[in-house]
Length: 72
Image 1 (cartoon, rainbow, N blue to C red):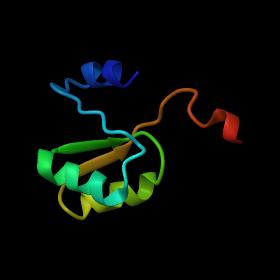
Image 2 (cartoon, rainbow, N blue to C red; image 1 turned 60 degrees about the vertical axis):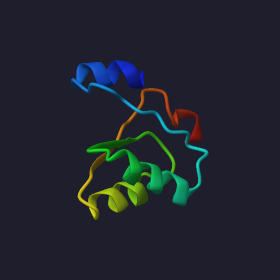
Image 3 (cartoon, rainbow, N blue to C red; image 1 turned 120 degrees about the vertical axis):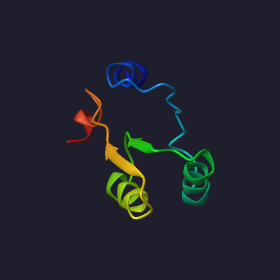
Image 4 (cartoon, rainbow, N blue to C red; image 1 turned 135 degrees about the horizontal axis):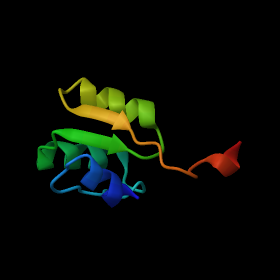
């Protein structure tokens, strides 16, 4: 699903990072890769989007169909 969304948006090289990474490793990876945009699929979406935007990196939650429906 993520690759399909990336192609539709014209993203050249999506980099998928595990959601099991700890906060420091996750934010370090964003900095080290020089990511221009981050799509957050789940977890603490608002926190990571805020962190990215406060550092000048575009970020947005990427809502995946079927994700979280069983949590309601």
